[in-house]
Length: 114
Ligand code: SF4
Ligand code: SF4
Image 1 (spheres, rainbow, N blue to C red):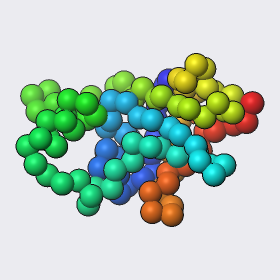
Image 2: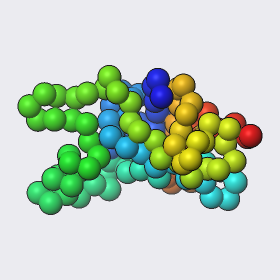
Image 3: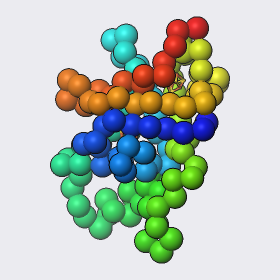
């Protein structure tokens, strides 16, 4: 995948329109796609345990080497009806995730029906 852009400024992984997560999960429900990894910034409870989990499993921010945005997040996707879905991986050249609506649903705008 070439790049991942995201309009969800309220997500804790959003870094100036790029996604700072190592991996994201895209899912679908009620006929819409959404980023399942969205985490509202104000919902993150700071604690040592949470921080370790966050930095090792999700974030590409390293305390010594800074942030790595050269490689976009890997996308696992269970939207089987999308033409870009290949064995639960996204094969699109660029992916755009939209702003949250209805609380936390950030649609995948790159979704195209097969
Ligand atoms: S909503 Fe998803 S794609 Fe956007 S910054 Fe958050 S985790 Fe990354
Ligand atoms: S473009 Fe399609 S396969 Fe890729 S993340 Fe979006 S819905 Fe999933």
